[in-house]
Image (cartoon, rainbow, N blue to C red; front, side, top):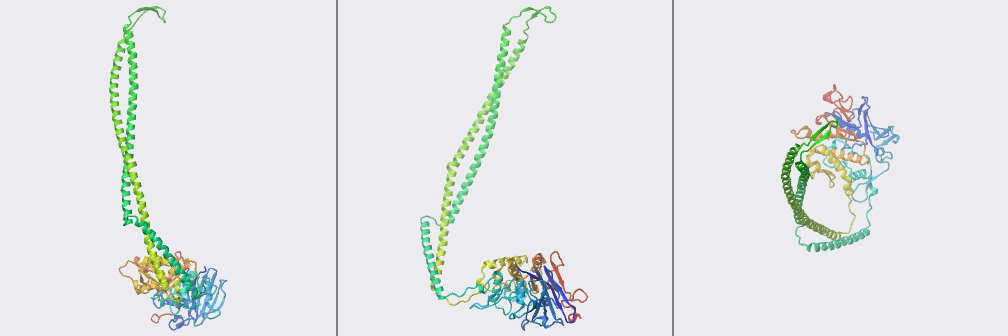
Length: 613
């Protein structure tokens, strides 16, 4: 979608030094004390935007030009620049620049003129075809879609900023129907050509008859369904399905706790059984080793006893033998001294065997105790497992079935309640439809064409800025379709926070709507300008500066400076703080000092207040 923003304002002629204000694409502050030409900046821009002065809405630059005779406005588009120049007091605007899509030449501010400036501004928004919007609630009256009819959403002069009427509707004589229709077109593209023609009374009567038949059919269907539900519930002894469900859920919870506790105890017993089985296995290993040692001792006793018995039965004998070394004959004598040693060893082994017998008996007793413990634990585990499988689990299943039954009854009960309500509603609709008067040409409110899907995003953007600005009750903010204005906490803006807040609330409202249009990629310029939105806002002195609406609103604008151009015209003393020039953050400060020796006095060169001469 086409966007454009303001690059430069030039006021020249009359022998004066040309006055130039350069704007940046981001956040621009025009600050200064009273009577320095801050609001005149807005009047000059508005004048080039096609403003025609009236008795009740004069133009400062026309009434008091101080000899200046020309105002130029430089706009930046996506394809170049557009320069618009209007002589003060003239109804013609000269158009030039580098944007090749814009035809150069002279345009009139009169919308009835064949070549009027309205076409240029709409073209810059991407609107090249003529459109009409509804202008009255009755009949088929329409009026042309114009640049001036939507400008109040993006450009707010000081006289309009604090008004108590809706800031979404154009001020002055532009009617609410036409104004709301213009915004509807910007949001949706719906114009007067999309409106439905009034329906033929015969067709209306036929539709009414068909609708009555449909409603009657729905009433019959609901009546049949209600009777079935009432019969199904009457067969059950139930007074409060919700209470029954809660009771069964409590029983299930308690039973599940018992089941969990029993399962945990069963697992603990199983761990103990594993532990005792380990001890039994160790004891059996010791007993097995003792048995092997016993057999070894018994074998040694038999072997040594055989030696001792054999030696005891043998008699000493002398025998001649030949020496294997020297070859001499010698005499060998039988030695029986080993018999005593063998007998002693035999006695020692027998004592060990006796001690081994005692140890084996001890191990056997230990094994009996271990096995007794294991049997007791297994019996306990079997009892718990039986409790789980034969009592707890069946009870749990039964309660779960009961719960499902109660839930089903509760669903039926809820459905019955809904069916009863629907039946009453349809009967009421049927009565209303049958008794309504014959259709007549009725008023059509343009606000009926606004569905919630259209304004939902706007309300979210509105609450976002209100919350960021720390406006009380921001979460409750909404668009009241009765007066097409925002309300906070169910109260109108002028009531909810006091008249002094209307300026800031109107600013936030239009800022949110214009931002929302850009998010939707709908027609909207790339700038937003407002004059004196903080002027009437006074906040409690005991508040910390960081908690004030002014402080947080300015910080919000700074944080979002790169999203589009915003021009804020304000008295210096009304600012909570003066932000520094910061090109990286997109902040540009234009400061009027009202001091001839310090900085820029005001908008117009060579023009000073009498007391400052």
